[in-house]
Length: 115
Image (tube, rainbow, N blue to C red; front, side, top):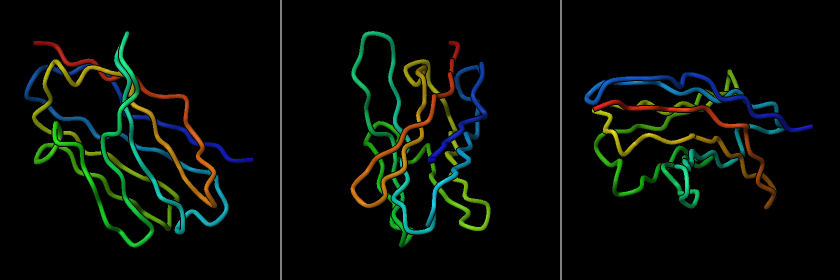
């Protein structure tokens, strides 16, 4: 059974930093495409960043230069380093793993940025 557990969310002032972690219980983690999404109240879930099995990364324009996605295949964990946080980054952040065309989701972690 695939399980994704996010951690690292919390309350931070604008300009601050947080690092999210996602521990994945999934066979063949190193071959999975991993991604972070976010969803604010009343809004659709949106892609924040993704990292392929080959370590290629892609970012949404609204986080470029501020967020960094990385992975540690030895720990089956993906990270999202978030710097220079803005109030508009306030959302629930979700980890997603895609393997063999199946996508699995974590429960999410709340990030709140105060102005």
